[in-house]
Length: 111
Length: 111
DNA sequence: CTCCTGTGCTACAAATAACGTAGCACTACG
DNA sequence: CGTAGTGCTACGTTATTTGTAGCACAGGAG
Image (cartoon, rainbow over all chains, first blue to last red; front, side, top):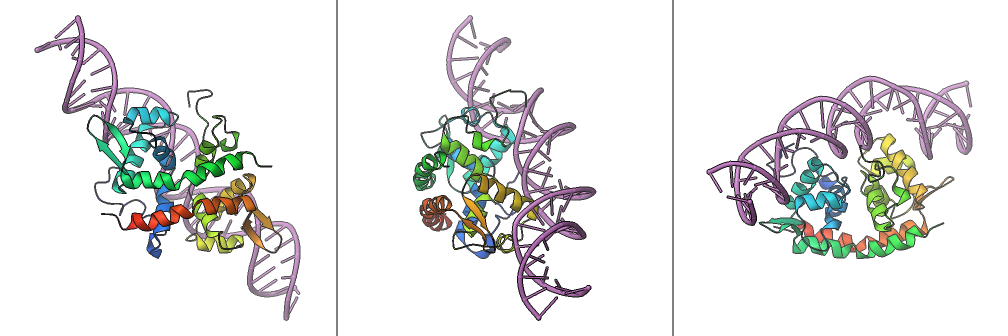
């Protein structure tokens, strides 16, 4: 699954053909572990292995795949000696998720 | 699958054994089509088939599975003769997603 | 230099989830 | 009755995820 080219290959970001960016974003974030990985990076950089540990020891295969996708999307960067960290754009995304965090609290108290 | 209690098997979302609701929510929404399905319901109720059509004709198998999960989570309801629609809680969730919509616009204009 | 450890990353088989087609039971309308 | 709509499911095929093992490289002791 090595994908040197842009996301033209395996799954052309469902819904992107409609021209609605939200569909491309929903498809990117709707893949397993993607949201979780970005979330775990919100408080600072993590090495690839620390990241796997933080994500319930997810397989390196999928973690690396998601990191590649997130890096392609310009949301995550890898700095030498510093591990992975969110780009300014990625940080913006996580800030957009703050309302979701508050919602999760209310949601957990449902029914 | 060699760890007894550490991994949650991806299925026991609503267990939330981590105690952090955001993790359960991230796990629920991080499954394929879940975000998209909820998104397509934001503007009003849809029948199951209209929903599949709206989601690029996704398989009924996964759509029904996601709808069951969303109904269990209290985010979606099925009303007789009216199709599926978001509960007040589900509508809250989609409102929490509005910042994400704005972000998608900026994101689509990236480098 | 050699051993040890940690980094990012990959191969590969097995398990799992999603896909797509077809079809069910039920209801309503003609 | 016949047709068409609903929600929903079975099942074989395909794609994705998982878990384990391991690679090449870089730095730090010994």
